[in-house]
Length: 187
Length: 223
Image (cartoon, rainbow over all chains, first blue to last red):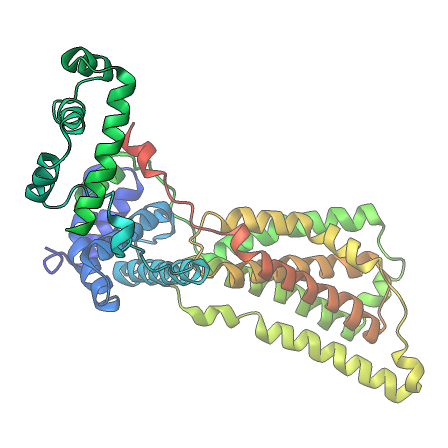
């Protein structure tokens, strides 16, 4: 579209925009968009499309804030490009200042790779080994695991179910966990 | 926000604006205001008794003309600096009158030294200069800053330095009508020195005085 719009037309659009004609202003901004985007992309080849679009928008907003400085008797593009160059330079300055104040920290993994540190966090490992280890537990411990961990009953419910006291269930459960940890570590 | 959406927000919220007159015209408006103020300050401080004699002195006339021309040229350059796409060579406009001013003061120092020897370059304290020139340049400084803020802050430090030079030039122009100090070395150090100081301070304040004041888009969108 920008190729079809002459400088004189843009000057007329801009003069209309200065007198408050929203339609002319929207037409002008849409007409200049491809050439403005190309100019910014050309000068900032290393930036992503999203960053280029941010700079385009920054330039449009800046154009808007100083639209009174446009003199319709003067060419439009040098006026716009002067604003765009200034915003690009400001953007580069902001970026340099931000990078100078930032400390680059390498991204640490949330957990550590050492095996002993991950043992609890990584669950029970192979479920088949765990099942066999549970089968090998003494009957009272196996029952405690079955009721409290597999069926997920509360201590009171498990006590009613098994006829064992709450204290005895706790002891059996604790012993079962110790036994299972040992068994799994060995495997 | 997508760019198309931004365009429709800008178009919807664009109020009519008065295009800025040319930098020359704006500088003339500023000059008229500044000269009225300078005349008031001179009358308030009391015109120096030997003014009529001084007006006939060619060195005084050259230096006053150069100070005024520096002020005007700096104002034109400052206004032009806020117009995107304006020829940047205009920023050098204050250089010729400034050179003439400095040259006249230098030549005055030289001739005082040749006629009176070291006594001709005796430097005394003249602290009145600084507050007097600030007082004489205050309204021109405020006026030019307010006018510049309607433009684009493309070169904030240079623009505000030029504005400081313009106001200090007018301030010095007024000062010499009520402050009877004409020894070239004194004018050079205390008065021209104050002009340089005020220009330097203005340059440092550049970005605080002139910055992009863009529309808060979120507010515009949520209208």
